[in-house]
Image (cartoon, rainbow, N blue to C red; front, side, top):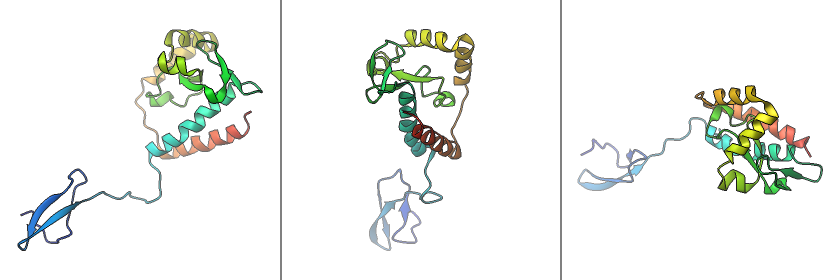
Length: 168
């Protein structure tokens, strides 16, 4: 039926199973998942997931005082860095500036999550801190289509791990 030459023939990973006949017997094709080209290597997605908590901690600890307290850049709430979040001025979906330290600052969960970044106050903070030129530059960079490379993410992981060991 399917040109089956072997009873252990496999199908694509998108097909759960297919029953077919081979020499008068019924067989199920086994879903096939292509192995990674190099076993043990991490994907861009895995490395990105690994980098984010390191970068987030670097940002939050970097903006905290000697007792570990940092201030939300949009509402002024003060709390321990472990209770705060690293909030993006321009969405982290914009890969080109996702890990740009000028784009990420300490925010309380209320502003970062429930108020969706508290954009109006965040923009005021950015203009006051960096000026209009930097804000326009970040907005320009955010429009670039960008994909991380494995070596870039590995480098950033090592960089921020080193920087974290010197913070706080």
